[in-house]
Length: 342
Ligand code: NAD
Ligand code: ZN
Image 1: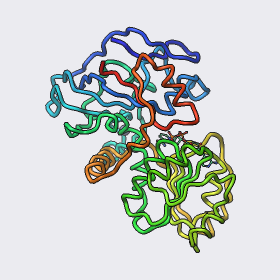
Image 2: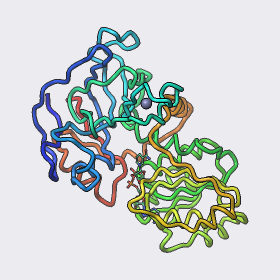
Image 3: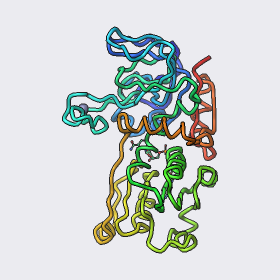
Image 4: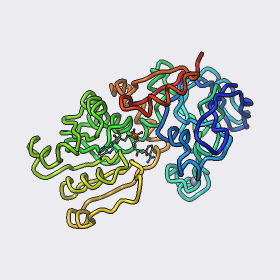
């Protein structure tokens, strides 16, 4: 089968023929239709220090996908050929304390599809049945392809109650943009989104932001005055990984404010802990998706009108992967999709 492979420990990717994956007794074999390009894939393509320390070679990469079941292992009763599915990208051990207690998103021994086990940028992927999510047969395939990052957005955005609250989202990448629509649907009052990129700020407005601002041009104090806010933000969703964004956020929170941190810090971040202590802030780290409450919430929010279409900005055939990766790195893109169905 055709697959996009990190062949050796160096920058670049190769589109090549690899053997079809094996289907164990507990596995589901999926014919991939659409995939999304994630920041993780850009790191692996570029072969930065994180990738060099994490990714074994050779490896088929990619973890955001939708496809059709083509074969199931002998132990699998809940899935059948023809069904439309996506896969949870974190494969958990099932045996650690958290897994045994049903808190699988807190597994201490997670492996990652397309990171340290074979991925989805291929015509076929084999994954454990415990990682497969059924879609409604009529689901928009492009939306279904990005359930993994949509799940990051939903997990983060629903971690704290946002009904009636003023929410700050730092970072309008694909995940921050999707989170904007999620908190809008969840009943937030004012939603302020920050980013440095004007194209993404415009998308944030389209996704339902009350105000979308470049924090280097407009400080958050001025934004709060403009909106008539007197006590600061109730909920913060950090989705940039940037030190300045986290510091701006902590300074802008109301007393008792709650911060969910999804952004992966690009470096160690020093913060003013006095703001955390005296303003009694809660900061919670978020990783991946809850298995499978987040997946359930994504499905039902889409069924009740959540619209993430503006985030899906580019579509390419998998053979055009070089243009697709260039677009994903470029300044005028959010989520870039690859088509594997033809
Ligand atoms: P992205 O890199 O596309 O988006 C980040 C955005 O932050 C960019 O648009 C960038 O312009 C903006 N930004 C840069 N400096 C900023 C600043 N000072 N203030 C506000 N915005 C600023 O990433 P994404 O795919 O949307 O993911 C968002 C973050 O979540 C990334 O840090 C990513 O690594 C992380 N992530 C975490 C998990 C997890 O499970 N914890 C999963 C996926 C992604
Ligand atoms: Zn575990």
